[in-house]
Length: 167
Image 1 (cartoon, one colour):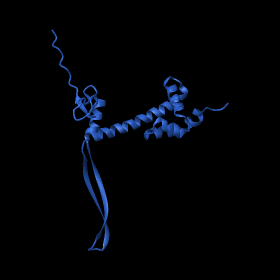
Image 2 (cartoon, one colour; image 1 turned 90 degrees about the vertical axis):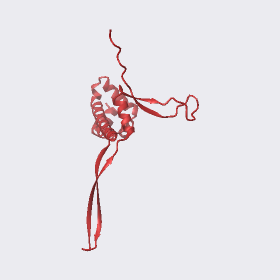
Image 3 (cartoon, one colour; image 1 turned 45 degrees about the vertical axis):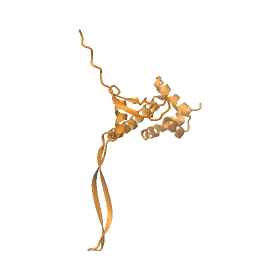
Image 4 (cartoon, helix red, strand yellow; image 1 turned 30 degrees about the horizontal axis):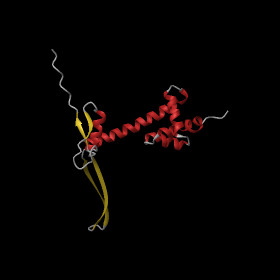
């Protein structure tokens, strides 16, 4: 009896699938690397979600690896939204005329990356949906044709409405 592509092309490479997903590869890219159709890859994951234990190993390794990659991106987005400091180390060779030798000079500089408003907007709109939301600018001023928007999107705080006094 011949073995299925799942057994020959997927199961032996679960460690690679996990590695690729952690590096941000999409399901389509992973399927291509495995030499299977993307529809087959999706089918295997779907079967696992529907309780088929034969495909649970693939689902577990893929989902866990995706979470790792997502967590790294989330941490990077948060870092950019808040700004951060880092140290830059430069090493240069300089000629010392007194001794006639080339010496290495290392300088360390602390640099600041300021907060990035776009990152903060994405963070707030996705993590604090109850308090922040995107609002497209509906005004047609500025030369846009009627019915078109200017393409400006603002992030606005959603203020809670005061509760009516109870009688």
